[in-house]
Image (cartoon, rainbow, N blue to C red):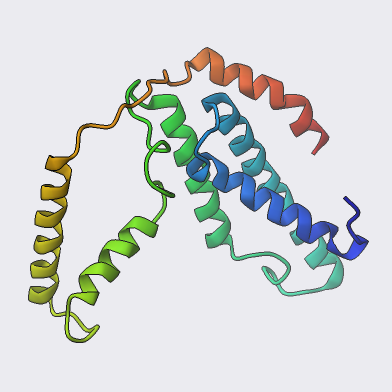
Length: 178
């Protein structure tokens, strides 16, 4: 792939942001790969932030004007670390990535709220109208779930401390290059 010089920084930035989201959103990735990609993205985002600070000082630009807000960086990295934490501490039969779409993001919550809001005559729900709509949704979902058989969950053991350490040791040459 040929990338113009002016876009290489944007490409790397998007790559590292994507690597921070992989531990949460990818469906069919082994736990060791989840951790490896997540740690690489975490460190890469820190590197991009440091390079942006150096560039900002060099250009005389105001602090924070050459990179995303520090709160956004922190949120991305916290999301990444929570995906790694699930990979290391999960129960054998717990697999949040197997069912549904983007289960470890805020999208299912937003869908639930919008579904409750659509049941009202206007989009401005009172607390009473929200709780009534949420109760109707819960009753409906309960009926649907009681009619279905339990899905077969394939078990995958969480990473042990030794396996996580092996992933981090594998990344050490890459992190030293950065």
